[in-house]
Amino acid sequence: MSSTPENPASGTQPGTQPGTTRIVAGESGKPKRKRTLEIGLAIGLVLLIGAGAAVASAVSRGSEPAPAAAAADANPAAELKLGYFGNITHAPALVGVSKGLIAKNLGGTKLSTQVFNAGPAAIEALNAGAIDATYIGPNPAINSYVKSKGESISIIAGAAAGGAQLVVKPGINSATDLKGKTLASPQLGGTQDVALRAWLAKQGYKTSTDGSGDVAINPTENAQTLKLFQDGKLDGAWLPEPWASRLVLQAGAKVLVDEKDLWEKGEFITTVLIVNKKFAAEHPATVSALLKGHVESVDWLNAAPAAEKAGVLNDALKAAAGSALPADVIDRSLKNIVFTVDPLAGTYRKLLQDGVDAGTTRQADINGIFDLTALNGVTGKKTSAEGLGKD
Image (cartoon, rainbow, N blue to C red; front, side, top):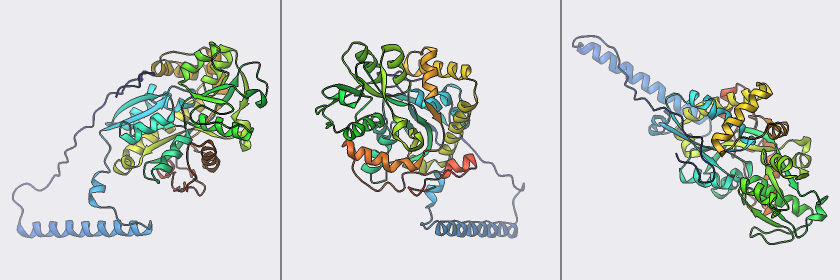
């Protein structure tokens, strides 16, 4: 799959879905009529028992038994189209793709990748069928779920927590200095855009999605934000890593708000892994394989020596976003992030309310947004949706 124009994709992993022909060995020669009848009765009994078990299982789940066609479609997909961003907050994707961990677990399923700048664009691609799954911030995932009345996506794992800051010009020392200023976010309706608008509202400022208000917010592609800030055309931006660190270390910005200070225990989710619901229903084995690669990537990030981690991430960023980063930017970025498969479900009611306050989504019931069954099967642990959906 081709990448977006702004961010060259890291390419696709080779692989094809092998055809499978099952040959059943049997007796040579023409079988006797009695033997044929016995085999037919045995097969019928097995099928009857299997159907009864399927019905019993469906009843125990409180749902109707799945049709035979759905069972037939439960095979691995021929291709998995995966989206992610060229951000350190998407390190599990960067590592999983560059080190081949995802492709390895997909086996014969071909892996294609596409790199995005921010969540709304990735959601648009997911809903259009251009990708099947993507790493993304929580707010675009919530917005898609709300707009589709729960039909579009499921959050199947966490990926990263922390790693977002409001960085500004040195002369800005408090919220009161922001009146009349121009700030940037990666994209309208994205997780950092929502966080910025919600925080400004709490400071008493009015903003608008058209860029007007007490503080102007211009959603801008991350690389352009860096240049505009360096050129003095922006007063600050709410950004994920490594972009917050780039503005601080390469453009002289300072931190006005570290988002972790706005959350209980300093814990907030930055990146999750979501999947198109239709794809997940048709190819549960592929979703499980994706999660195996994802879990291996997170485990690697949490165990690898700092130098090795920085090297792998820098190579992956160069492939995904076109350029590597200085060592100090990588180091500062990684210090602000926790890599975890837990989506921190307890934070989503606040995330939803922030989206409502920001004017980018509407109030809704988000019970069911999580489906962590496959994740729990892969990890052997109980990651809970804390009452917000299936766990």
